[in-house]
View 1 (cartoon, rainbow, N blue to C red):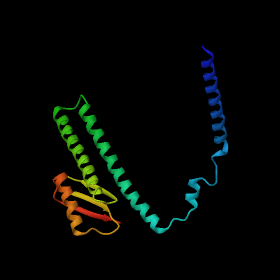
View 2: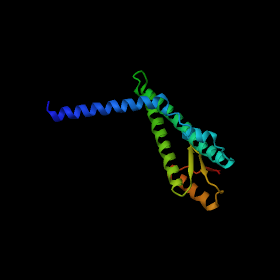
View 3: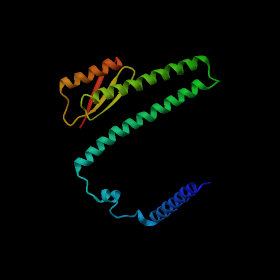
View 4: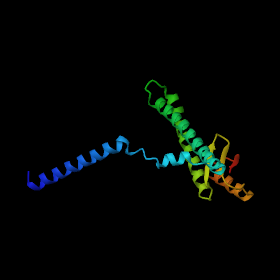
Length: 170
């Protein structure tokens, strides 16, 4: 080993020791700063408009999260049916068909949401059933007739479903 390699190794060891000492000091109470952002936010008064906006944001987040969890559970169940060696051929074909349909529905919902968001809406949630589509749009003002027609056309073009229900969240 050359002198240069020894110097590099000892320098790195010294840096590791310094970082370790710094981490130990911070973990022993250095992170209990009273001006911490979480404490500032918890003591700050939140007005009604902020609470309402947060609830609406939570609505879209929770609805989307719930839908994703249900879809993931369904897809996992279908995949387990397909991969099970004890499953009959007819059941595997039915599960494969349902999995394909579920994947297409998820894709269509995502494409519809993205297309409507591209029209300038803040947030959109789309649910597709076998013969009905429900679109929830976040809009501070209500929808005009031409905006509703544009949303219906997007849904019909992508999913081929003609029965479209449009709801507005402010």
